[in-house]
Image (spheres, rainbow, N blue to C red):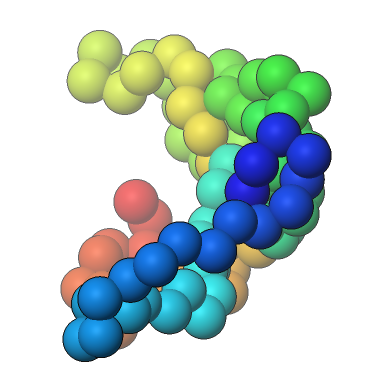
Length: 85
């Protein structure tokens, strides 16, 4: 995209074409990619020092961290991650 907000087409050799068909991700306190973009552009601090998931007394746990919304929807078993992490 150029400075005018227009997409710029470039010459690509046959066989070197690529397609970006979508993007997905889970980000702290963000429900979708548009909200992530807005948060980043507005310099929103997506980390916090709240204790909504675990206590911060343990020295190996950082005081600040980013926490994704709707953690109960995370398939911990599929990714072989203990749910309490």
